[in-house]
Length: 121
Image (tube, rainbow, N blue to C red; front, top):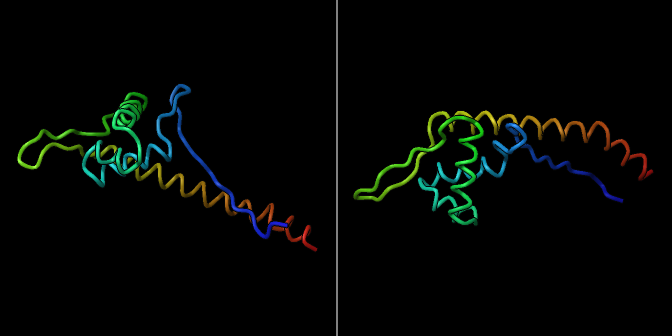
């Protein structure tokens, strides 16, 4: 018998039935913010540049806001930064996801821990 069960939650928000932002997409935005470019973020996430660019573009279209600002090359080369709106969205979405995850863990303890205790007796 299993000693404890651990809930796993995957959350995403849709706009007109299409994914607008998800945990995976949030991690992609975090990688862009951390690395300073879509190509480096794609490498970081283990995906092709084209897929990273497509997902960011889809998010912008579905959310109706700019999420990235490309910077033109120069001495250090070009790059990409998140807009203040993207940083705010990312912060709020991740806080919501954490709250949902916490709630799922609480509900698992309330509803399933006693079941496991009863079954092991």
